[in-house]
Length: 215
View 1 (cartoon, rainbow, N blue to C red):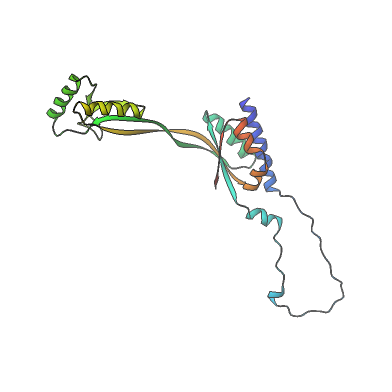
View 2: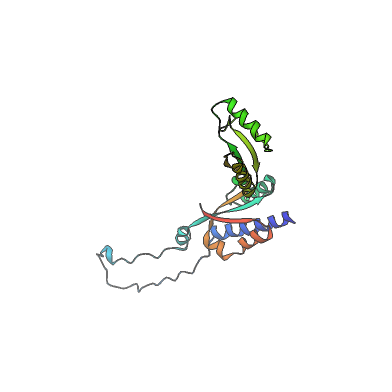
């Protein structure tokens, strides 16, 4: 079913690309003046009427936009859509875009002046019933870690409990980043996008997010 919907997307985009490359032609009426008239040997440039813009010029002046579709489950799905677009003369590419993953909260004590001080504090924490260990690498090497939490409220609760027993601590927010698979389609005019049902098909039929952006 998902492949069938992707084929519908391809058909719609191919039509939009053809429509954009072949704009409808308007009839031109030529008003011919009589053959016999007084000759005019001199005409000022300011007296010459400006030519009306042609359909092609008007089409070319329209701002083009790119649309990004995502998130695809696999790169194969994105590659399939891109290949079909390129075969029909529409520029498209697969992009791996960064996405915010999980946020965690670490409770820690900053590095101590000596290893002896760190071990004495660690023993006191463990005697008080707090799980903890000495950090041996990274920016906080020589400090003490007292837990990593996915919920900030739990981290704050433990920090308050530690402060109540005489152990001041800090909370470090750690953000992890993932990548998402998107397909960016280039060079579609904004007017064509707004006049078509393509965006609804993309967002509803395939359950994709649609982002419009300037090219």
